[in-house]
Amino acid sequence: PPPQPPEPDPNPDITVEKQVKLESETEYYDQITANIGDTLKFEITVKNTGNVPLGVTITDGLSIGLVYVPQGVIPYPPTTEEDSTDHIIHTWDCGVIEPGKSFEITYQAVVEQCSDQVYVNFVSAEGRYEDKRVYATSEAFVTVGCPPPQPPEPDPNPDITVEKQVKLESE
Image: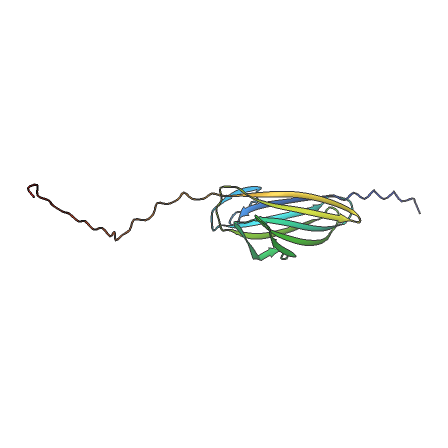
């Protein structure tokens, strides 16, 4: 048989991207503005950009103020869920991703609170090949402005008592 070309050196590598959109929109973005009550859709895409198969785990942080909707997660719900100080952390075990292939997760969240700060929603991907580890991160930003405070409604039945006293000067 003819000589075989040498096997390339194992070169594990990975990318990840997290984007967000309003549920009613068609395009995903890195940053959006939303209102309380809006439903958001997040998309996470991890790609094996190396030349060896990778065992992949995705860790996703959803900002407090956005509420994860368990229904409608594609392809399947997260493996674990835990609370941190300012994020709900979800983890997906994606199995093995072959070189050049991608794995995509989509899920929804509802905006429950406004904030003076931008909600930073992060994702990290870890790829494993033998004893090597590769990592990638991405972020999607959601701005939810707080409406200006409304003046209190006037009382439709004010309770006013007027008392008048008269004093004659000659007294």
